[in-house]
Amino acid sequence: MSKILNEVLAANRDYVNDFGDKGALPMPPGRHFAILTCMDARLDPAKYAGLSEGDAHVIRNAGGRASDDAIRSLVISYKLLGTREWFVVHHTDCGMETFTDDIMRGLLGSSLKTASIDAGGWHDCCEGPGSAEGKYVDWLTIKNQEESVLEDVTRIKNHPLVPSDIPVYGYIYDVKSGRLIEVPAATEAGRVS
Figure 1 (tube, rainbow, N blue to C red):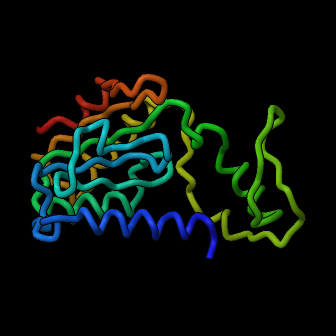
Figure 2: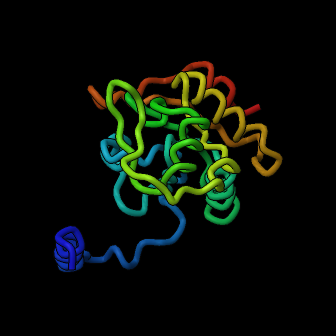
């Protein structure tokens, strides 16, 4: 077994020992809201939003973007599990700002191995095999955090499966301070009509 696998399984054993009555938590989130945020390891939505198990749905992907799958999850969260408010939370110093769709497609086209970045940009470590499949994906990269939050809130609010009475708030998490910074234009776009 790998060192990481051993660490995860040991942590799980400790968690199970202190699990208590969490097995009795209901499926719907107790505080009736959902957060769409980035997968970045520096973000801990439980801490920055004051969550405990059972409080809210947290949907994470690269950049915290309103992809089709993220919207699918939000719609299920509302329709079947009763969330009534949603947050879109992007963050400063996001890796999704470090490349474009074309860069990602080029990297994938030359190799499927992990790439590296330096002052000169992204570089592949290895030669092939690559894949052309990356050219069919919209990588939802970010040029400007405020604009991307506004874009995602607007995309969610305009989706035909999203009821107009769900407010969607737009924020940027500052990785240097832990502060949630409102994007007023996004929150305005996400208001209940």
